[in-house]
Amino acid sequence: AACVYIARSVLVGQFLLFSLCSKRFFAYLRGMEVRRNEKITFRCSALEKAALSEQAARCGLSTSEYCRSLSLGGRPRERYTEEERELLRDIARLKGTLQRLNNYFGGRQYREVFEENRTLITELQKILSR
Image 1 (spheres, rainbow, N blue to C red):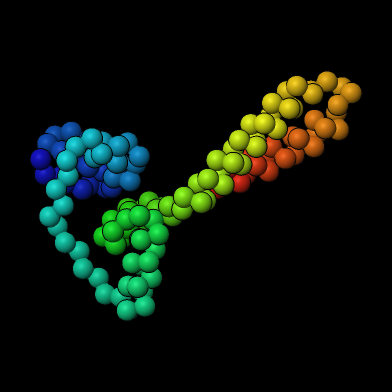
Image 2 (image 1 turned 120 degrees about the vertical axis):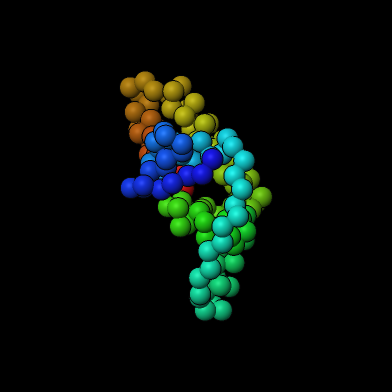
């Protein structure tokens, strides 16, 4: 089925499916096999090409996939190394332990410990959400 782009929307047959940049559209495309037979060429310097290739490799994507993702409004994320993933797992375990301590010592006599743990948990959540 050929797609006709009209006002940033996709028209397939007689039905207007989704906005071209919506998450639902990309979820729809993930469920079907997409043949990519159109080619786009652009010029850049050797330094820019090397930077694009390096960034794509850090994200675990080919240069084409990386450029396609950027051009369609995506934000490719760098892949974590195994060491970084292990550190994130340790931080998540520490956060869970502090949360359990917070629940256990949540009474009035342990208010200082409770508040200190609450600030640590908040900081750990910020680290994990990156």
